[in-house]
Amino acid sequence: MSTATTTPTGGRELSQPPSDGISNLRFSNHSDLLLVSSWDKTLRLYDVGENFLKAEFLHAGPVLDCCFHDDSSGFSASADHTVRRYVFGSGKEDFLGRHDAPVRCVEYSYAAGQVITGSWDKTLKCWDPRGANSSDRALVGTYLQPERVYSLSLVGYRLVVATAGRHVNVYDLRNMSQPEQRRESSLKYQTRSVRCYPNGTGFALSSIEGRVAMEFFDLSEAAQAKKYAFKCHRKSEAGRDIVYPVNAMAFHPIYGTFATGGCDGYVNVWDGNNKKRLYQYSKYPTSIAALSFSRDGLLLAVASSYTYEEGEILHEPDAIFVRNINEVEVKPKPKALPVPPP
Image 1 (cartoon, helix red, strand yellow):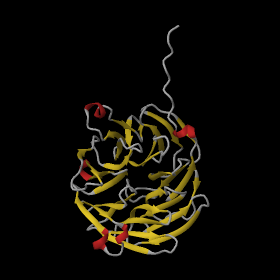
Image 2: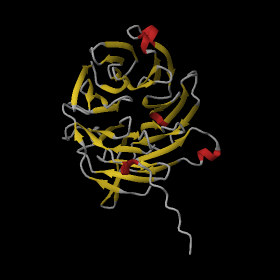
Image 3: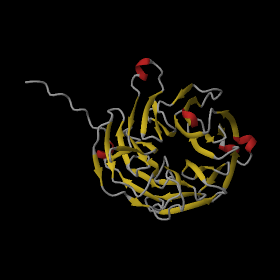
Image 4: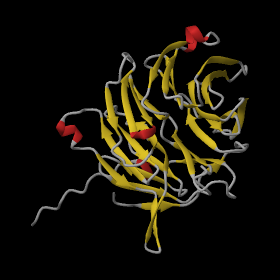
């Protein structure tokens, strides 16, 4: 991919950040509320506009993922094996159920009205939040996966599951009896993140080895010919290539361009259709652990949080930055037409 401009300043830093690694952050689909999960065993809710910590919920173990139900409640996936819902205003906690190992991912499907969780116990579970506090009623189904679940992404009724061993399963939530597609990642190394394109035509995969693959659901030869992968989040130093994991990806809700965040501390914005890098933001204090665009695409939340890729070393404190997005950073640039000869 070809390259473009760097911009200064990391954005506004939120006060009262988590005290340990940030596992994920997500903007609401309805407002500028931000939900943050952390290894410090907390789920936190911020009002980004006011730079205010509205609520905090303590778990028995690290919180590995989170997502909104609506602006009044959200879900958490915890290393204590549990899946929970929190009602923000009252502080009420509802128990949805548990896995047999840490729960790595949680998503809420507005299309199906279900919570989907993926665990290191090699299963995917679907839950009906209306049955909370009665796990028999809440659990809709358990679906065995080929390996530990590392990342989930939803678009409409489609669910993409990325596991250890570079497996990728694609499901239709209306028929979970078996995957619609069983795939293998086209990247040679472990998957870090999967994110569906907002237009529903495919998904992006990122790996620990500084690469992103652009994939398509349509299995026709013509559609599959469009898939490709590219290198990113790497640098040359003294003649050697230093390669960084790509921990996070987030698609812009309006333009369909996407941001990637790596252990190099950089956030890049890409135009996947035109195979171009649109922007690189100035370097953040440490690894980028998570990214999320606001519903209108005007804000980007960035978790600058060391991900222990080099083990236990001194590192910058965990921080959440929220940057205002300029259209020029995320809008695809029209292809220049060749000038006809005179």
